[in-house]
Every structure is written in structure tokens, then in C-alpha cells.
Length: 193
Image (cartoon, rainbow, N blue to C red):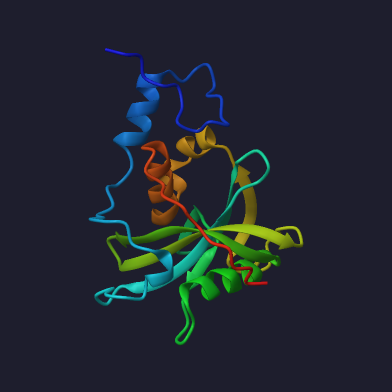
């Protein structure tokens, strides 16, 4: 049997205390399974959503390929999540993602890739999350909605593995797909600025 890879995150070096078997146990078995039959474009997320709440947001990576997450700290919910939120009536998922990034992080961003629409069921609700890769074009990310969020941070892949119980369902789903090498990105050329 060939040796297991140390990490599926090319820019990461796992701490020496984590071996490949431990990584596999922490990732493949501890993350909830998200039902997804075929790849669905984030741009078309509003189609056939069967009553699911429609959300949109973005993955922002820094120069070292670390992912930006924002920490929700409300009395009812404490979790690290991708910036994003509800898609308003008459708004496309892409427009909602750009707006939510501006409202939550105080930056102008453009969509650079479509990472798909993901159906996620939790104990309390079901939603479809339209996920885009985004690039900050103006400003520095900071917490704007201080009544809801208290921190932002860039995480390397191996750091996220340690935060699995503290990740939102969408962030955990993205991590699961990343670990399994199943993140599919369709490049987009529009600016949304």
C-alpha cells in the first residue's frame, strides 16, 4: 500500500506531531457528509432549490493560499464561517456575495471563480450556499458588523482541521471538499466592482 500524503493543501506543511493516518481520521470521519449529486454552478443556485434558504458568499485567499474566515459571536451561535449571507429578492447569488463581503469586511471584492452551489441540511434548517472565489480589489478586511462578528483571520489548511468543531456547515463542507481534492472552480472574468 502506498504511503498516504501528508497533506492535500499544497501550501501547508503539517505540524510534525500529525501523521497521515491521524490527518485522515480527523478529516474524513469527523466532517458531516453533505449530499451533492452533481456539480451545480453558484451562479445558477436559485434554480430548483426546493424551498431551501439561498445564501451566497466568498472564499478569499491571501498570498500564501490561506483562507479568510470570520468569527460569528452571537449569544446563539459561535462559529468560524466564510463571509456571506442571504440573497435578497431580485439579486443574483454573485451580486449577493459581493455585497455581503463589502458589508461584513468593508472591502470591495470581485468574483474570480464559481466554486459551486452546495445543499446543506442542519438540525435547524436547510440551505443552498452559492460559493465564489473572490479577490479583494480595494481595502483591507476588517470586522464591520461588530454586533455579529468579533474577529477575522486567515487559516492554513492544517489549522482548519484543528477547528472542525468550530466551523460553520459551509466552511466545514469547503474543507471536506478541499481535503478530498473535490473543489471544482470555474474561472470567471467579470469584475463586479
